[in-house]
Structures are given as structure tokens and as C-alpha cells.
Length: 164
Image (cartoon, rainbow, N blue to C red; front, side, top):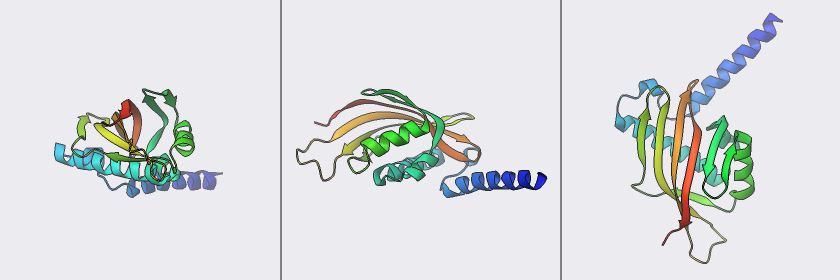
């Protein structure tokens, strides 16, 4: 029994270490200034939306907490990692890509927690969009640093509409 418990502990610890190693950003306690924090969150945003745009649900799942809260002005509140991943699979994969609007990103520290990211992003519909309409929305994302990994814990996506 002790051997099994030791093996399970090793697997859990190594899994947490591998998750932390796969992220290309420093730990919260290693970030010393605003420039480093902005660089870290910019990298995480790219990692998150590269997974979103390529429908890499496994990777996407590693970047959000189990009890993710996603507030959307058009669809309301969705709670949970799996609910989020199912929505991406059913509504986004192969239909929509996201691009951060240059110059719109703002990042602020949240002491002992992580960071808040604000910005504007655009949504394109490759292969299906011949009408020229591109969607745009504002967003607020809370990034939590916990157990050696940065993950999205809360999202507010609002002011959705076509760009003019």
C-alpha cells in the first residue's frame, strides 16, 4: 500500500512539475516589475489563443481552472472547465479564429494571486466569411498563479459586435 501511495504521489508531483515546465513564463514570485508581468501575460494570452485557434482542446484545458467562470454578454454565465471546452468544440473549432487588437492589451498585478488582463479582440470566420463582417469584443481575464502554473480563473467577454 505504501508503494502505491508513493507512486501516486510521484505521478502527481511530476505532473504538476511538467505543467509548470510547459509554460514559458516565470513564476509569479519571480516577476519583478511591470514589464516582466506584461511579457508573461502576453505570452500566456498567445498560448491560450493559439490553442483556441487550432482547436487544441487538451492544451486549452491545461490553461484554465476546473471552476472557470466565463461571463459573456450574449450567452450569460458558464461555469466549469468542461463546459468551456465543450462550448469551444461545438461553437468555435473550424469556425472562428481570434486575434488580439494591437495596442489594446493592458496588464495589472493582483498581489498574491496573479494578474488581470484587459483588451480588445477580433473574431474572424475563415472560409465562411465572404460578407466582410468581423466581430470585435472587449475582455477581462483573471490569471491565477497557483501550484506552479498560470491558469485563467475568470473571464468577462463583453461589448460584442461587428467592427465598423
